[in-house]
Amino acid sequence: MPVLDRFGAFIPTTDIVNITDFVDLRAALNNMALMINIKDTGIYTQTEFVNGQVWFPNPAYTSQTAKKPIERQVYRTVVNFGTLPNTGTTNVAHGITFPNPNTVSFTRIYGAATDQAGGSYLPLPYASTVLANNIELSVDNTNVSITTGADQTAYTICYVVLEYIKE
Image (tube, rainbow, N blue to C red):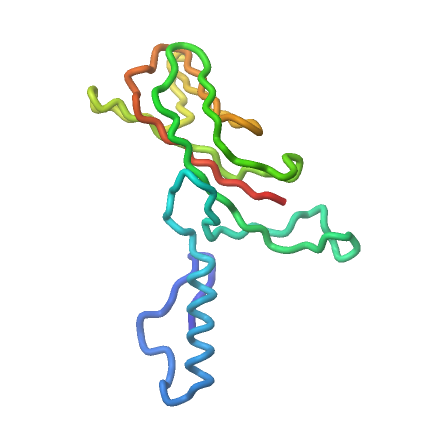
């Protein structure tokens, strides 16, 4: 039987069922499907993708509200941002369409930038002890915005990952 505990969802690798018993086989296959469906999928595409993460129900909903409290799926999309800015802000459209922006919650906003010529890599956002070297990463209903305090145009490859709940 699959184990779901504080360490995650795992499918046993030892014998889990007596194959001659159809009920046990069906239960084992069902448990495997449940565990596979809740695993965080390692697919990072530029289109919206349900990644397998499940968040607790929206606290605004109760058994008394029109909408019932159900667990919420997390969506993921990757923005190919391009080159980091030269001291300022650059906006790149993320292409996500929110039917109602007031019901969207971001769960993760992160990225990385690569300077191929210099062999240097930065996490985004980036915090430095030198204030001008900090890099801010933000999102609004239309764009991903990156703000730099110094010229960071050597970083020509930049990917930003957005993960969000739509209710």
